[in-house]
Image 1 (cartoon, rainbow over the protein chains, first blue to last red):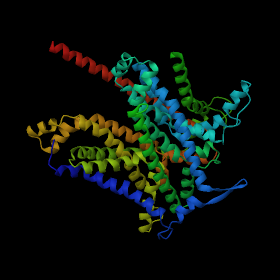
Image 2 (cartoon, helix red, strand yellow):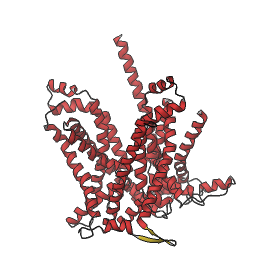
Image 3 (spheres, rainbow over the protein chains, first blue to last red):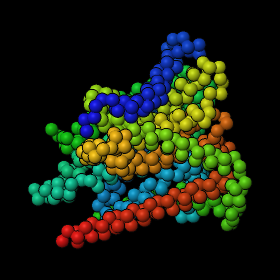
Image 4 (cartoon, rainbow over the protein chains, first blue to last red):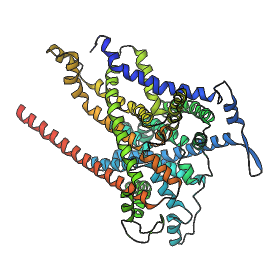
Length: 286
Length: 276
């Protein structure tokens, strides 16, 4: 298979060129726009504005974009943790089910992923509204009513709903491939169910958990539709801010926010990767 | 424990399917309301048939997804073969890192970055409407490519490298050996990659939103613009149709999978019988 060098670039060349022009260069443009003003002269104003812009909220003065940014991070982290708490047991249950049931559950997880998420998120609006279906059901049961729409809780529900399958699938695919002999060996060596879970299944499923976290955290940090619909536009997230600046044609400030988001996500993902690696190899404590 | 896990599974799936069930039910609503059901009718399906803008956006979405799939599948398969033949570790890891970028970056950043580049070059050439079908196609091919490459690469690694060599020893030119020996071996990966590319393109909203011009609207972008105003059950009717199309496709593919694996089984058994 050690073909002489030539044909490699004939095959790889078009893609290499494409990747350079449409993946690498656009990212350079994000940095370029972030550090320039409308006349494309160098400035730090866009970044300073992100950290310093203030506005009145009630009686207190807050840093507008910092507040939005922390809120995005907080809601995305809460959603990721909930997805993990729901998704991990589900993936485990799926991997233990019969072949037929595994297939059915896989299909059921895929169906929502293939339907337009805008419409599905919109349907949550009709469920969660004050006069919506959930409150209708609760009052019929004589349980009073709850106010959810327009709260941070509603945004979290939307995020968990939209991204839960992305947490389940990678964890499931790791668990389904798990060598059953390892579990038997652990049993033979005196582990109970809890011990098997803690010492064998949990550490070995870490790669799946890592990619699950990746696939939930990144889209929920940067979403801009869920918050507009389920938060009633009251809870602006960083994605909303970027989209808003794009619509207002403030491309340089939009680029600055995208740039900051990108850097923070890179740092966060490196940190999470290190953390899950420790869990995978250390199990509990080394 | 068994019951507990059954209840848990049921609750999670109820959570996942509640909104879908609701939008199906309300697509048949008589009235305009999305929360009070007043009677069964096909009214919204009828209105959907006469909604030219929506139907055109469906057509646009399909054209875009098909074009993006064809281009990204061909270019991605060639790229995977090239990556597999690379000897330099350094170039290999550089290319893999770049290939990972569209998959790990949030869609909003991919969308913004492409839009900034298109707008910049558009301005350079004195055009204010630089976003169009072409820019959308370029963007879709870009985010589809990694999925194709990542599906084809493992198949190439599993392949017996002596196969194309044998074809060449038997008189094939390298190109012919590639089409006769390599391609059939990696075909399952190519097909999975193409399907993934097609569904990613079909379903994409965020990147399309930032890179689409006024003239060319895909369905997700149209839905977004529709949900900005008041929404009628017409949109639910559309979603219901999509749901049943997907359901049928999944059932058919599962069914053909099963019959294919059964065929394989009987083949294997036959072979065993012959050996005996």
